[in-house]
Length: 120
Image (cartoon, rainbow, N blue to C red; front, side):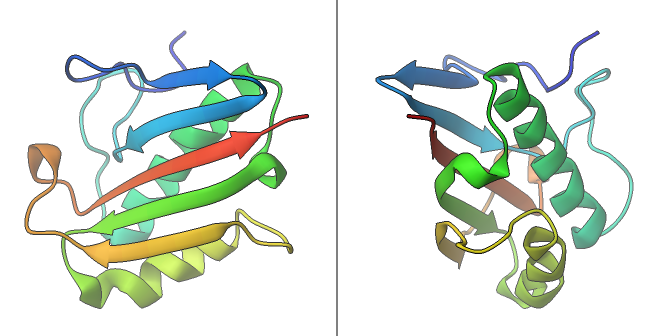
């Protein structure tokens, strides 16, 4: 059973190098159907993070290994609701993070999240 969505193009879902894990941007796609989950920004944020969680677990990591994340939002007004869900996945010390609005995201998504993790 696929635990995270397949790549939508000519890229790797993740790459590893010297203890680092570089995870490509994850959309709120159901890993079984590769279709968007239903719901608003909270549900979409949760699904993107669940996809990241599955990738981390496949590499014997968890969210405590995440050093840096980047959150792309289709609407910056979704920031507060996104942050509520995002914060529930991390404990202090939190990863460094950038979050900003972009003009468009793949397949009309409202959110995309990428991370860099490290396990020494």
